[in-house]
Image 1 (cartoon, rainbow, N blue to C red):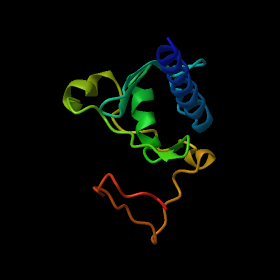
Image 2 (cartoon, rainbow, N blue to C red; image 1 turned 90 degrees about the vertical axis):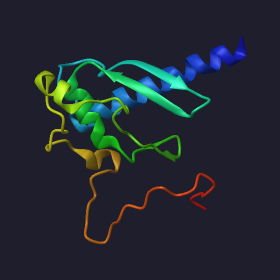
Image 3 (cartoon, rainbow, N blue to C red; image 1 turned 30 degrees about the vertical axis):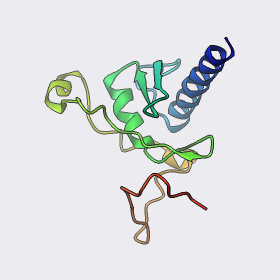
Length: 126
């Protein structure tokens, strides 16, 4: 029972986090209210699906790649089966360039910043 309770609490935490962040950056394109419709977490494989209300809001959420959630840098990517040509008639596939990412510590691009990816899982920030 406690494990199920903890899962519900964590689902609510993820939902609230992404809903608040989307509102803070101006990413709620479908109007007032929460952008997040549902969250599915796969604990074994350590990933989650966060479903948004609209294609435009899902595209805006792509700009959150690298955001810090509970002390961890989160990778925000499209699902592996995402097909941009099928999604194109439904809305934009790129985030709105006018999102205010600085309010959540993102979008601080400068010439001295680089991306390093594909590091082994055992690397830590320490």
